[in-house]
Amino acid sequence: DDGSGRRVFELTAQTGESELLPGKKTPTWGVNGAFLGPTLRVRRGQKISVSLTNKLPESTTLHWHGMHLPAEMDGGPHQMVRPGETWNPQWEIAQPASTLWYHPHPHQNTADHVSRGVAGLFIVEDDEADRAGLPRDYGVDDIPLILQDRAFDDDGSIDLRGASFLQSLAGVGSPGVLGDKILVNGTYNPHVEVSTSLVRFRLLNGSNARSYNLAFTDSREFHLVAQENGLLEQPLPLRRLQLSPGERAEIVVAFKPGEKVVLRSYPPELGLSFPTKRFGGGEDTFDMIEVRAKSRLAASAPLPGRLRGAQAAIAVPADARVRTFDFNSTVINGKGMDMSRIDEVCPAGKTEIWEVSGDAEVVHNFHVHGLTFNVIDYDGKKPDAWLRGPKDTVRVPPGGTMRLAVTLPPYTDPKTPYMFHCHILRHEDVGMMGQFTVV
Ligand code: C2O
Ligand code: CU
Ligand code: CU
Image 1: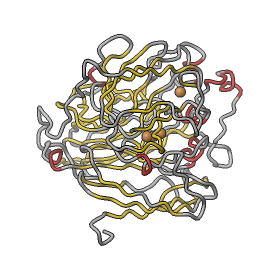
Image 2 (image 1 turned 180 degrees about the vertical axis):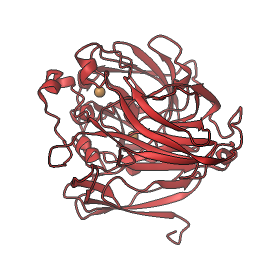
Image 3 (image 1 turned 60 degrees about the horizontal axis):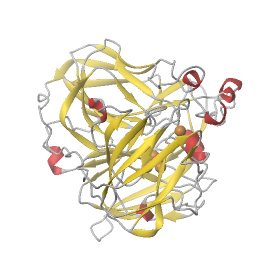
Image 4 (image 1 turned 30 degrees about the vertical axis):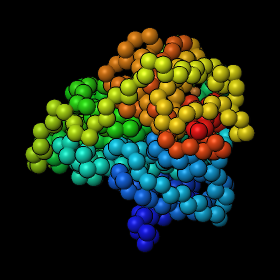
């Protein structure tokens, strides 16, 4: 508390050294530590103040991915913090319970800074969602899993270039470095012990470029209860779930005493053919984490049929304005990112239809700052049930089109833009990003 009722978070972006692989010392970056950063937990209605000090050797930012807030607090490329400086954004948490995250967003340099280790979770809680009946004892039956891949050089340092011959064959559309090692919450070869019959996992795909197609190795059923921006109206039974970079999902999984099961990523459906499928990670399988249930499990409350605190679907007015975003190679609507150009000027609080079309042979996804959207249709069809919740990031159908119902932020600022972009960080860095203001 800073004396004015604001909750204060003191964050320092810093360099360090981590033993990510056994016996190797890796130079890393983190927030308040050597690698990754603390989970920030806030409540709807709370006023918060962040003090971010940059002790890194380069200018950076921290962007609050998924947060609804004024553009100048957003931590995008217009809020650069130089080495030695402190940035102090303040805002009020004005959105439902959800699993958000933070990561750097420096112009043309995001992939590097995220690879080096700067990222963390930002969890929003609210009274209504507290009563949804879901497991919510953080670290006990409510467990965050930050899923990332990394490539390492022989000396243990993180490979930031990924300029392999095979990747260069994929040309300008190359997604950047795809790692062959998986880290979960910064741990290689991880396991987690659980002690309750139901466990909620908050999954973040915090990778630069890799998509995961997640399932348990015994293909057990689990329930999807939330997407990026909040709870679903009812738990959705699934056996597989795909997450592109930046996407989040909350799932609830049942365990029996003493059992062990692995959460695995199977080859993701990228909708591409060779070679871009292969160089986009479309043929790769990884064990993500082993879950070990204790020999005695505390009985959890049964999963409710409907979830309190869920968000209603966005209602689209018949005369909603339509904007189009055409993804091609590494540009949107034929233009690369220009910090001084505003691409779209949008009316505060209005609901619009944003129509996004994809490139047939390059994998992309679409993320919009400062707001929540619903997928209206995907590749000409009603979206799969697992794509119908409140979202802020979604894979773009290759060679197809999707329509999103977008409710614009209420915060007007004719000068400071929010970003929309591909969340494959190399694409973002080479210009697959645009800017919108809200007036
Ligand atoms: Cu998570 Cu503009 O990004
Ligand atoms: Cu964002
Ligand atoms: Cu892309």
